[in-house]
Length: 168
Image (cartoon, rainbow, N blue to C red; front, top):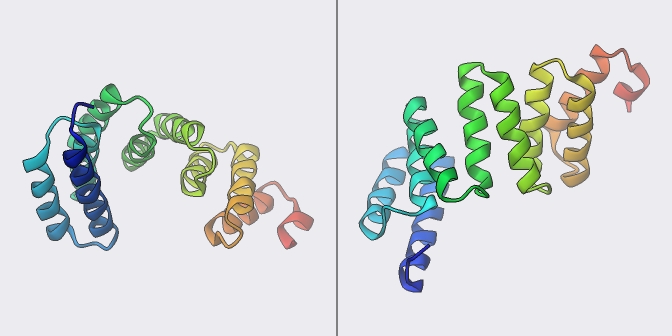
């Protein structure tokens, strides 16, 4: 991007603040931090991604999808956008699109257990149980205490009647 280093650092700092406040379910503060970021820049992939994250938090899924697609036009390697786009599609029940977006986030960031868990879940919802089990197992390898991945793995084993594996 064309930002000078001072502006780039400010965008990164404010972007982290926005994401953290969204995680902490403090949407008004996230929106205030986003307005500060908006005063610095309105052209980067991070700007459109953060605007999409706020829209997603407000359940404005059409706006979120539009901004995520803009982010990916600017930076096709922006893996958080694929992750969030998968969540948008999942909210709509479009599991195939959700699975593809999840796959791309994992492809770009293979060591992120959260992206991988999302991909496992999308496969589970599409009844691709073997792939869901494979991805859940990789999640557990990456994050040993990932209880959601362990539960998914057990559910798959039960569905596939892998009693011995489910009892491990």
